[in-house]
Image (cartoon, rainbow, N blue to C red; front, top):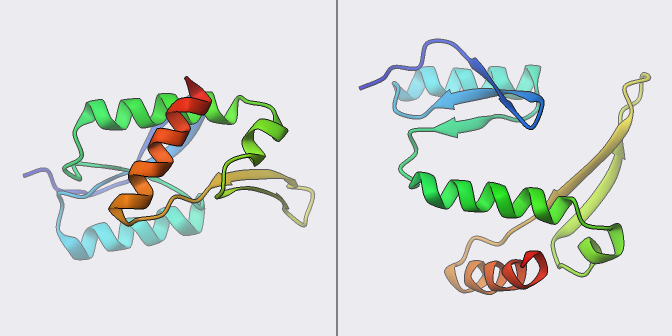
Length: 117
């Protein structure tokens, strides 16, 4: 078993993000998640049981989706964007909210495949 002891940083498309190993002791993992949320606002998890090829496909399709024009992205229910920041650290955050019930996931993934295709 790999035990989570520190937050490692991984580069994905030129962005450093914290990586949390879920195979560690639950109390330690929880502390690392809190730390990543406080210091970065987001994180990537590993050793969660989802096969690598599924993650790779989702990441590839996500990058393709967010590279689309705003009107194209707005066609998908769940897409949103928001201006963020107050003290000179402003920017725009784009997000895609996906539902967690199996039927909604199946329908959304079929729609994404058509849009990204």
